[in-house]
Amino acid sequence: MEIRANERRMVRWLFWAVAACCITLIAGNPNAFAQETNRAEAKGERTLRAGAAAANITPALGGSIVGGWAPIEATHIHDDPHARCLVLDNGTTRLAIVVCDNLGMPREIGDAARAMIREATGIAADHVLIACTHTHSAVTARGDNRLVKDDEMNDYQRFIARRIADGVRCAVNNLEPARVAWGAAQEPSQVFNRRHFMKPGTPTPNPFGGEDRVVMNPPRGSDTLLKPAGPTDPEIVFLSVQSADGRPIALLANYSLHYVGGVGNGHVSADYFAIFADRIQQLLGADRLDPPFVGILSNGTSGDINNIDFYHKSEKRWAPYEKMREVAECVAQAVYRAQQDLKYQDWVELGAGWQELTLQARKPTEEHLAYFRAVLAKPEGEKPYHVHEKVYARRVQQLHESPDAITVPLQALRVGDLGISAIPFEVFVEIGLELKEKVPLKEAFTISHANGTYGYLPTVEQHKLGGYETWMGTNLVEIEAAPKIVATLLAMFERLR
Image 1 (spheres, helix red, strand yellow):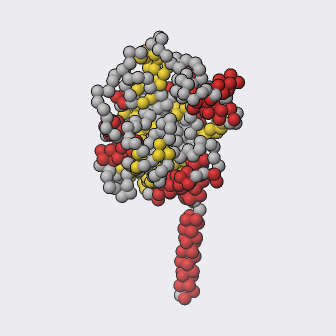
Image 2 (cartoon, helix red, strand yellow):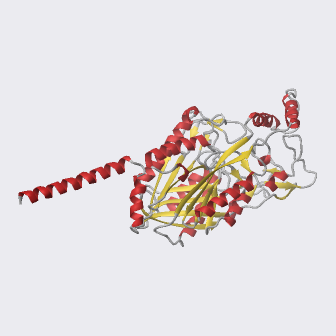
Image 3 (cartoon, rainbow, N blue to C red):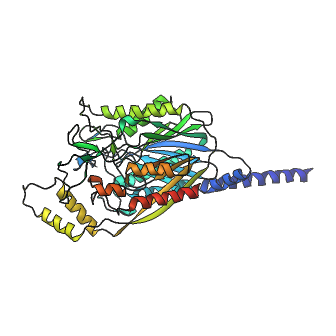
């Protein structure tokens, strides 16, 4: 009897020793979740989990707000910018989506954040999407506009990278059994193409000494307007995430509208994107939850879209932040109405694709360089041909001195039958519409300003029309870049499907 009792004690001791070792291995190994969930999947135990968190990325006052032609010193924080994070885990794959309230970030910030996320959570770098909203009233994260290495980042850039990683880690900490659904709403009242053909005889100068066929942001209500130069996309596609018992966890929406603006002088603000996040939380009854609900609005393909109706003069003078609230309310209400009819799924396929694409850089000709040398040599006070010609003289010289090719990251995510493209440019709406039509899933949207910032991405046809977004120095890559990017993304989605 004593021998059997000793045997039983030995068996119990061995059991708890092995269990302790397993717990230690899982805690110390960021890949352990994949190993454990693979075993669960093999047994047919499929559970979708989700977690969300928002990390504050408010800068110190005194930095530069660079949304306009000249930097403005940040003197007041109207509302705190955030990195809003969503993590999805279906047992075999984890995805992280982060949307930051900033104009745009160099790729190196995201790469630094991904390295920290990988080390802390085991999420593969190519499974992490990091984008910006493109608010024009945030302190710049672009530094001096050079491509920078990690050890050359400034303090604010390092701070943002750290906070992005912290936000994703907190979202992982909040993972719980979940269900998801996706849908779409329409809000045409807030989107207008900002590029316009002008009536014959209307001056349309450009900084290169020539004339364009279209003008960005022409005078409102002018009798020189002829017609818009392109379409709009009024659709809001969104992903709704709830706990297993129906508690809202997060909602990620996408709308192809540039920033709205209308802030106080020197104010830091996340623009209508943050107001939407707060308003959708109220509409869903998700205030003061634990863990907190996270609303996220990403910038779609709005490179040629804003919310100004150029064919009618405004009948009122908008107070600061008033127009933002109007736009955010319209978008939030449209999403809320569409959200009522969703059918949620407690497990979906998840997938990610990542591909580096090398594009030729725009390069000035000898004629361009000679023209801009003459521009810079003009006597002080001489009337310019174009108001921004000296700005573009400097930009063109930078392109002349830059490498001949630019390698950009492209990313495709799959959440069930929803496809998400990530493009590191200010993308024209025509490109987003083409991807929505051709991505081989039931719903799709594109997040722009994602995983880097490389200027505007017009279509080939829009390049022929000229205008601000197509100018060398505003657009940095080859004219054929858009079809190459679309083809690369569609091939990634085919593999994900």
